[in-house]
Image (tube, rainbow, N blue to C red; front, side, top):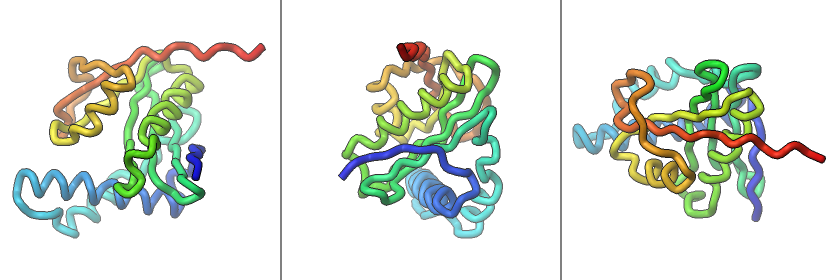
Length: 169
């Protein structure tokens, strides 16, 4: 089986299903750690409705979907914060697809998309309990940096200089 990564409309059924899986996992993980319970279903629905990803569209953003053997497996998103800095967001893979190289592929595809948008730097934030994500970002050359925005769930901030892609001959 092979991986593919391609742009996806933020409001597609595929994107909606992947975001629901993303929100459910990260929210449940947070509440189980801090409150010993899964996410309240009403709260989950409010969070899903509050952010649909409309900022992940050209010309200032992109949503990418990874497929493994044709099956939707995960997402990554990129949006410009300014003319030279992009933010990586929504990096997610279904649990059954992890360990197969898809996460690094999604991050690298988001970096390529950021370069296409004109960015020379990528930033991101994550929570402390998402240790696998922090390890992935460090492995891909991201370094911890100062906070670049306020977010009640952000505990770690990362940045990476994006090297220019070589021009085609």
